[in-house]
Image (cartoon, rainbow, N blue to C red; front, side, top):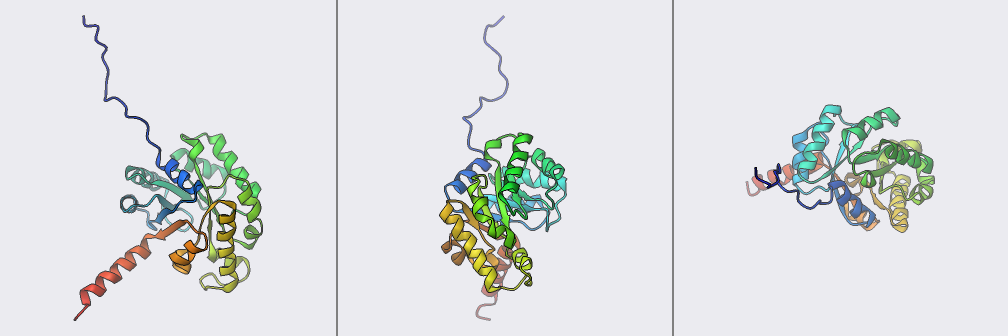
Length: 247
């Protein structure tokens, strides 16, 4: 009988950084991070967004329609193209959050964060769930109210959030204004968030459809989050303009 050991499968290659680790490293260094919200419950669209170069796929379960099975499909599609996938849940209920963590998400875009204690509680929940690659699990806090703005310094000082995003529509509602208008007080608070985050060395982003990429980046936003519908609209408009040029 041969003494040669029998092995199965191919030798494992050296471990590469996971998508979530790559994104977390970039956020912690305040490097530019490109995120895309597909806006539709579609794993094919998530895959295409990741293939276009997105670092981060934003799966919206608060204002979007993905169910748990679709979320899992979108996670796998994003990972296939090397992008991290984060979920915005519709609730803060710990049972729902645990289910998303156990499904394998790369992190949360956590809505309605208004205090440092809420950040600590969310970080504790993730720790207790002990997901794979837990040390790189992404926590992105949505700053969506005047109360959150007032507590922003304490939220940033926890050292537990990888980035903050401004929800300017909800922020407007929180001070008694309409959601969709570009109100001066909301603009001032939005850019105040970006500036405070930059001073604290924390990554940040704001609605690009309202303030534009250049203004957002100049104010300190390095988490650049697009909506797929806006990219489709811009591409279609450019294509139609080229088609009709000279007619």
